[in-house]
Image (cartoon, rainbow, N blue to C red; front, side, top):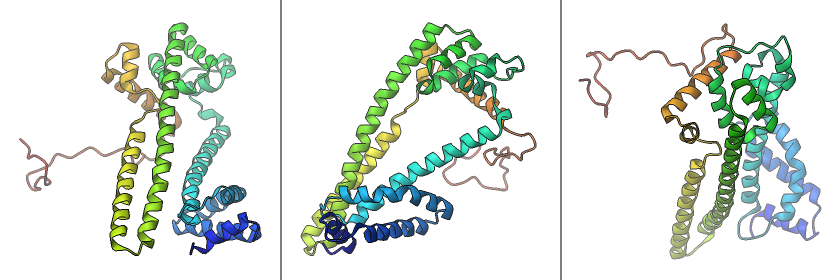
Length: 302
């Protein structure tokens, strides 16, 4: 194969080259790729410290199937980079909570700490409605433990056997949905690899007719990838508001309203009143006057 990096990787696997220089070249390639995307220097440095020990394994698992090693490497880097950022954000959020324990809300107390709830100094926030806490518990049922379910029942007066059965049902449904996501992800990876092979053959095929055939095949794989992404996006790993409504015997609109107000109340516990309003708070819409014509595609006021 004409790709020099691929040839070096294959030579390393055959014992014809030392691994250290090739690993350093791969590390520089990853660094240049990430910095070209305007990623933060500190994030890139932290990522490379974790990613460098994985390079040897990537070289050993690589198989020459007509696609350069660079494509295989960068596809892996994109996945690890996303995982690294998620883990970093979670660590920063946990560090923030540990540094500011006074910001714990009523909801955090029964989910995270049983001892705080029994303390005489603990006073539940009155603005958090108890019935809405049941909605929150069901919405996050996949992450609740048995002791936390018992605490929810104690605070809300909900029947423990009923709530535990609903939580178990949701967890079983989430496991089934997670299996679907795993299968779709595996299929997505296989189709993505086939797309890379087809696109590489398009670039290297000298015959015009065969090149058109490979272009059609690459286009087909791209369409399949789009369909798989949409199917993965449609799979929910948490119960929908309609599911919660069926469990509680409530209309979906009632569940929508309850969770909306619960989020609003919980957000007020974390928000300093001295902070400026967030960008998500939109100003009130002004009534359109006759001096400005309506936008194209919108109906004129009646």
